[in-house]
Structures are given as C-alpha cells and as structure tokens.
Image: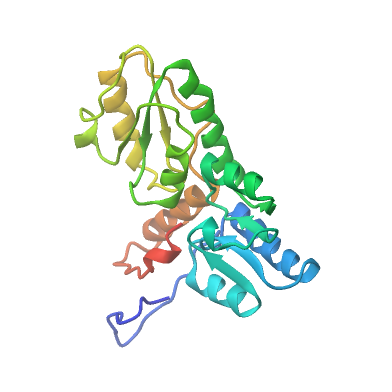
Length: 238
C-alpha cells in the first residue's frame, strides 16, 4: 500500500513480493473481533478508547458500522459500553470507568498487559524504570501511567546517560512491544554497562508478530539480492 500523495518509482518490469507471515498481530485481530461482537450483541453505538488498532481503514470500517472512537473517556455517556484498545489504557482510565459505572470490554493485548504488570511489580519496590520506546506511542504513554514514581524513556544509545535514577542498584528496563529487532539490543547493552545490576523483563516484550514480519522482510532481501523498495504508511507500522 502506498501512502497518500506518494508514488512508487516505476520500471518497465516490476515484481510485487508478499512476505509471509504478514498481517496483524493476534491481539489486534482479537480486538477487532471484540468490537464486531459488541456491535452484534449490544448494538450501536459502542464506544472505543482511541483507534482499536493503528490502522485507519479498520477504524473507518468499524465507525461506519456503529463504533464511536473517542480520545477521552469524558466523551462516553454514563452507562455506555467502552472497549479498551489493543494497545492498552492507563490505570487512571480504569479507575474512571469504575467510578462512572461504564461497561468495559478489555481488548488490551496480552504482551501489553505483561509490560504493565512488570511496571506494577517494580515500581512499588522503589525501582527506577527505564522504558525503551517512542515517546509519542500510545503504548508507551499508557505504560507510564502504571508507574508510581520515576520512569524514563529512551529511544537510542545516545540517550542512555540521560535518565536520572534514585539508586543505580535498583533499576529495571522494559521495551515497547513494536521496535525494530536490532534497536533494543544496543540500548540494552549500553544500559547494562551503566547499571551492572539492572533488571530485565522476565520474558521479552517485543511482539511476536513484529518479529516475524521483520524476519520475513529480511528473508526477502537476502533471497532476491535486489534493490527492494518498501512503502508502508506510518499508521500500519504497529
């Protein structure tokens, strides 16, 4: 798919490659199905906290069918059905839906929940938490909402020295679910040099679908040994 306003360079002969596996992460599919089922069982409207996944076409299709996507819970009427998106919500949002008596369908992905649980585990114990990821990504913003104290975000090796911590012996790191496969490794190595006692996730945080898709692209490049051009809208990057 080509981003709006962009054109791929054309040649006399071109081959379109479709890497496998492709498509959404499993939790994304389940989240979409949750909205579809709610529309069938409850009827319209069904409210969804932000886009159910980062795909404009999916969001627009569900909106036509009766899903109402909101930026804030203040836009949701009391007593309505609200669906939490696959990328999760903060503990503040969860507290608000309980206070207002909203009916909740939680479509948060298991790996996102796992990262939240890691924050909940480390934060009360006085750990400074360093999150490797993009500052503007919803998943990162929601994860930060679970922390009770100092949390820093870094997205490059150059930023490893930036976070200020209470004590170097009580530091833990977590990663965003959708980075490039090689991005976190160099950052983690730098963090381990700065904080020899740093705690790591019990299981990797990177989404399996992200890993599989990037592996598939790498295999295509190695197989073809040709100049491959990729066009991917930012909205489909996770």
